[in-house]
Length: 220
Image (cartoon, rainbow, N blue to C red; front, side, top):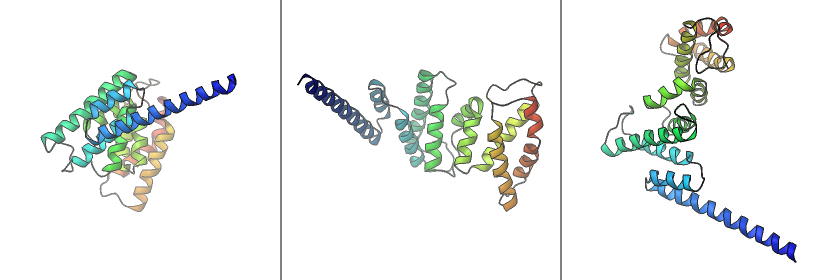
């Protein structure tokens, strides 16, 4: 009887905990629905729930509220949403792994590209990823068919390697396998003649020389 009682208590406790988790998630979703994103983040942090869904919701809200192709604010309300998004990303990143953390930046970028794939994300978002995690940024670009953006970033990265002293490692490395993926995608563009500018062809020539560059500067 004692064993059955203990088992029943454990099951009751597990169900109660599961109910609490679902209630918190439901409340977070409601808060996001009424644009109370700061409260949603506070509730997540207080209950040990991930804050990434809140950032994703806010990013999608920013994209949907945007009336122009550029990412400049077109109304006071839209401007406040973009400002809040940047503030929350920076604050949560600083709390987690420091200012150089890129996890939240990636969450926001993916959300933006999913809802508005043809638009240009804000510079503060791209600049952070380019500086601290260009490898992840290249993967996101390729996953969302932003081949020319990936090619431009790869060319910039390889150009920076050529300017470095031999055997010195960059602060944020791009793997050789990632560069190979960019190279193959750009070659596809060139073969299909879908590029309207000479830029991808220039990137192909630059990536052709990547083996020698990477021998001097091994990537992660």
